[in-house]
Image 1 (cartoon, one colour):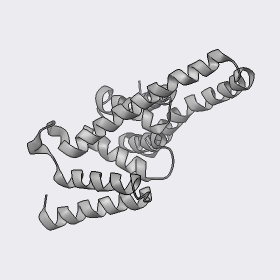
Image 2: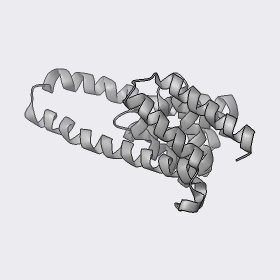
Image 3: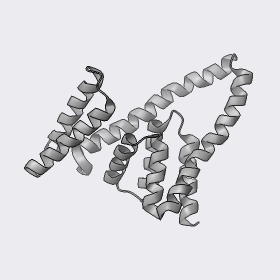
Image 4: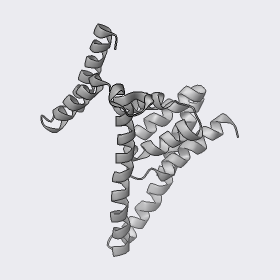
Length: 188
């Protein structure tokens, strides 16, 4: 299978099974681009998530475009993006018809209720993987490997978002500025 076809199929699978939105797709994207097709390292995947999160648009779509571009240039970006959105297009058209016909049925409501916790589990798993990588790097979890600057940015960013209701964009830029300043000042 050609590289472009592989990109399409990989992101078609992501789009097909990514219930719950972009954050829920992160474990699926990681599986495709780090494990099955080693197009990215785990560190590069973490960078991808950061870039995809801070750019406008859905995370999964941004990730598909980024990976496709990195692997096969503009044609790769287009093919990976198309692969990611095609399942959603088909599924949403079908679900719109089903929802209109069955929205009051208990079984249909049960399916939706069952998907919600699974979606939360997918998001939590992706978040935990990225948290561990951001705090400890690729060397594994140990106190000696803890990145104290990342931990401080995480704690302050979380407080700014949850307690002070700061703008996520400002938090991203502030944490990036702190990280850059510490790196430049201390070389760590």
